[in-house]
Image (cartoon, rainbow, N blue to C red; front, side, top):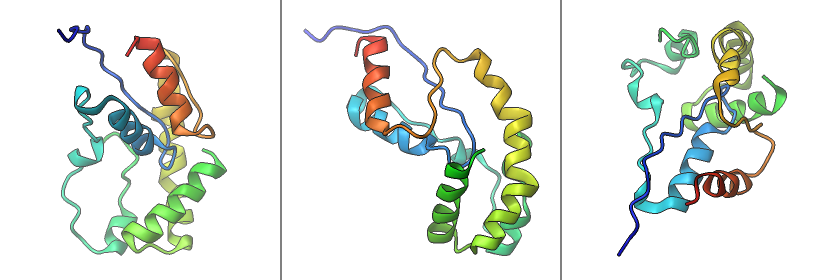
Amino acid sequence: MIPILPPHLIGIGGPSGGGKTTLAGALGEALGEAIPVIPLDAYYRDSSSSPEQRASRNFDHPDAIDELCLKRRIVRDGLDRGRTEASVRHQWELTVRPMFEQFGEPTAVFADAVYDGNRPPGEIVDEVTRRFGW
């Protein structure tokens, strides 16, 4: 008989490029079908506009960091969204960093655990699964 474990909700927050999607995917893989992953990116309003129009929108404000996060974002937005490094850096300074500092960073005080994006996702997954006894 498979033991029934109490439900847990794991919220993963952090700045753009901080590794949230990577960590959620690693947790999902480690726990298999036991964990649904619901990305908040799926809830943005439609932005099927051009890359230039998307670049001008502030996706980091609730109404809509560090160097490592910026580097990750430059790579991701360049490969997945066709953005130039200059446009990513401009958006980072104009909206991404200020919105994280205003709305994201202050919520860390409510977290049961805080991990920086410098550790391999596998290490964090191991800690989370030990924490909850999975």
